[in-house]
Image (cartoon, rainbow over all chains, first blue to last red; front, side, top):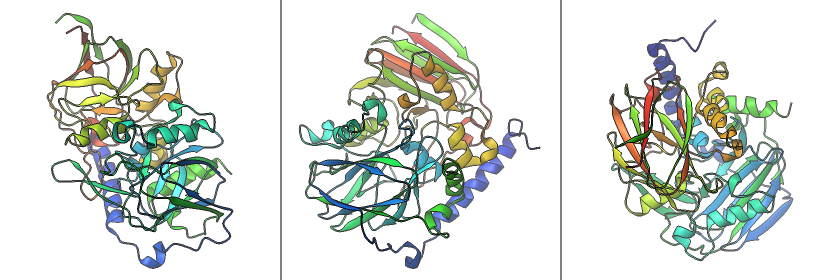
Length: 259
Length: 205
């Protein structure tokens, strides 16, 4: 039997390089539009408009789909998630980027919890980027105005949670990337009408705030975002559930909790 | 420099200590290429804790890089300075990739790695001594760990660039509880596939 505690450094390295090569191959393969085209969101259970600077606290059931539309091209929306059945399980930014070998979160990728399980899948995305390294703004950027950090705390408070229950979050509709000198550059806010769609893979609590990215030169939201929720279980050949071998293993862990 | 504490922390081991404001903690990578995972809490109110995003947002706003180096100020979830990296022989410390866990290992490296040792096990062991738990775990600092974020978005764990005897020094800007996991990971190159001991020195200057 393979004893993983006694392999040689060369054997460990070979295992790592094989995984890395597969991840790079996956990242370099463009998906055809027929695979990534958003599916219609029929019969929404709920729709709501979130004004600039405001937030919502949402409860989603497993396989509910949350569509977030940036109606006005506002520079970011802050997002955090918890497992509704055990709030000590929550979004983990480090695992999300590390397990998928990329900071690029878009259609096909998933949002991991700290327990090696998937909280939500990104089932559609027409935005130019979402960031989970620098993340939403706070009082340091927004001054006395509404900010992502405080709004996520307020949304969490509506579920009885405190600042202990927050960790690095996502800033949707925020295109940032490193340059050759190792600096993050903020590129642009999303276009008006940009949309991202998340499918809950567990019962989840969602904090969503209409507030900018921490590096946005515009530090207050410039217009509304809107949400729509519908129930749509994944098809057999669902993209997110099969996109990478890491996702497949993450869904083994996730589905085990519901079997 | 009179050491208040001077220990060798064995490979794979956990550690914690409280630093008074102004005290210095040095971490020495004795044999090189050893990742040292660290988390920090305000010793007076532990719900104020290290925030990787506050740290990187402030650093990026002043033109700094996406990793930690000499001069980096480690900030809390209230945006306050907790510690400053006052000396650094390595020049590159990660704060984006988080700590390894048994559960994340199953996803990243396969279910056969589930029962191997991991940093979050070390963190939880130390946190339990203070009545704390999983809710207190947030993205940490990985000293001496080389995690490039490339312009195309790729994030990997590459071979460490820390030489034997490499050293960092942190100055506490408030009273801080420090958690350390001398990383046990062998499934990626963060420890050169061979975890090794580190030395920790705490002093008043």
